[in-house]
Length: 267
Image 1 (cartoon, rainbow, N blue to C red):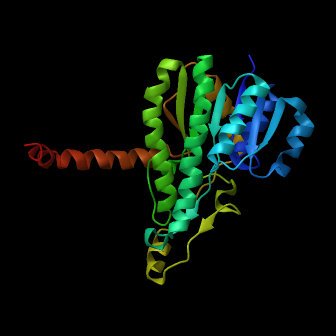
Image 2: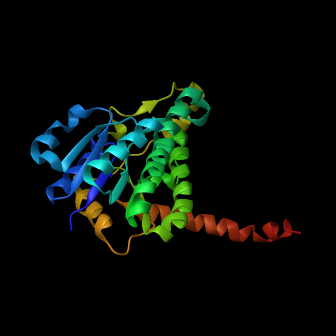
Image 3: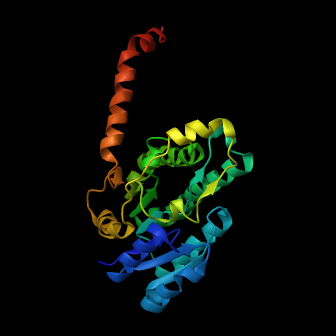
């Protein structure tokens, strides 16, 4: 059976790839983006199967209105992909109040508003799947991108609770944690704080040559996540497992080492 999707951030990157993948196999897509000009080719190719929605996910009222429009237009929502977001580079000390608030408004609150807006629809129909696009950076962290990590770790925590809350209603929640890909994350969409000279050495030491994945390669896997009868609570896209597993082994070792102190603190 065909599915109906609600996808944010569809003008480029993962959102665009996933919208096209769904439409090409005969699904219907409510494609949300701040700039609808990038969606023109989708409407030309797929006609009524795509509903373009101009949406800034930081506007809670607009989010609820867009979800109502999509649900009313298509009659159902089966898969919701919370994909809208951007990266902000800056050491923790360098972040201005405006910068970190803007990062959280889009990456965390935008995800929360979409989630809250779709839940009444999904509960009423007794099924649905929410794919929260967090990041490898939602389960580990690097210097110079603490604001981004904070937003994605917040989404992970929110989604862990959400998954348990909505399971009785037939709603699945998946945390999708992509590693580095050649999307616009490091391009025009990225924002950066003014650099403090004292962190020049930290910046240089933390520079990484990323092995970037191809966003087009995620098309098949995202459809599999939408269709599987056994959805994972969390899944990486890309080559993140080995480095993340090593970090978690280190965490476990530290907790075990300090377990006597932890128990002594219990009384």
